[in-house]
Length: 93
Image (cartoon, one colour):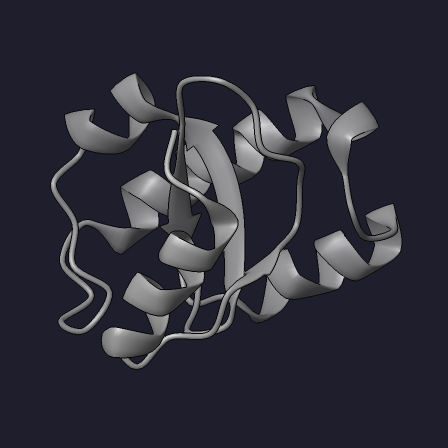
């Protein structure tokens, strides 16, 4: 598994921040739901939907899948459920 430092470095290189909304787990991939917030989702879910945050291509479908995963695993939230809900509402889907 890639270290947190490496994940943050790669995100910064793409002009993105790295503020995780849930905990890391084995076999996860970090998905940016916006330019700042990340949801760790299973890598298989992340690679099945082609998407590009800069162009918006496929972002609605992948964000729906990511937020659904987040709510199904709410015990791993690093932020409060109200804050996560507000982020979800502000995210362009």
